Length: 264
Image (cartoon, rainbow, N blue to C red; front, side, top):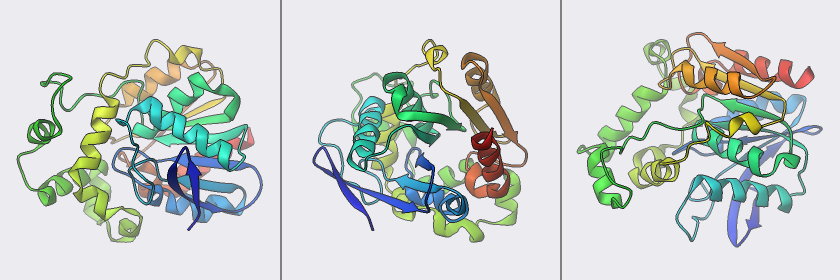
């Protein structure tokens, strides 16, 4: 269980394999567990690292309010601590927004960029509230049900209809049960994403970029198409019969898209 100190926060990460480094950043409510299949399979060719962002999994929580920029700064600090540079960095969902922010601020850290089912600005689930809304009012706005009901609602949105019909048994071990049931983690991430809009800035990303999305994702494919159209020279891969959790639903196709991109 590797832990490294990043600006006073004990930060957990998984690392497997040798060679060219591929760093994975999870999304809202997630942990490094989401990348379990990639750690197992892609590590046959690369050094694969998956990090727990602050306040997620086994990593300490930020002392300040969580923001996308602070998450990005934490990833940069983590890379410095374990001596990573010019790395292939992938981010899923909110993590995709984090790595876009990092690419704009610290492009020298990247060899290539992979944006997984993400967007330059997230739909705000609390848009009916003002920016000073409290955590409790946010929770009430998001759901008036129990944490268990909320967790089931979230899970039903993360996966495609076909995946849900088959059942989640084969991939349950990759899902961080505790954080799914902890609404404060989700709401902290939602707050971090509120008001972040990189649509006018992504055109300045000048890094070889792959954009991957699930055809049946809860995020409209038009959001990935926007990134593709605005990041010069980027590649776009839409994977059929996959929802938001492409890396778990269609791991073979997902991994192959990454392999092809890295080897070009």
